[in-house]
Amino acid sequence: MQLREENMRECDQEERKDKCTCTYNCVRRGKCCECIDYHLPMNQLPGCIFAKVSKAAEKSYNRDFEYFAKLAANNL
Image 1 (cartoon, rainbow, N blue to C red):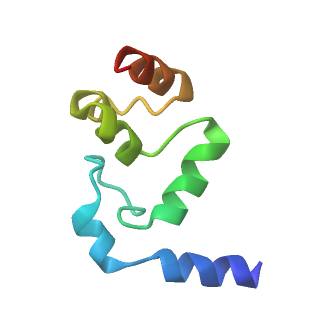
Image 2: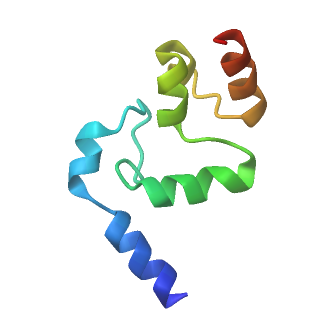
């Protein structure tokens, strides 16, 4: 567990906050590893992934895998 905590600290970079494209304001902003760890158990993807496909989709705050798959299929 200690190794995992060390990796989380390395991932927690202040500069990532400025580059984060997620519009939801939360404590994981800019902490990519924590964000992924939060979303994956709920079958969700982080907002930054949605923003690459559609800014409007990202702002819907629907983070489900199925929703992302539909968006990606429509963009092919």
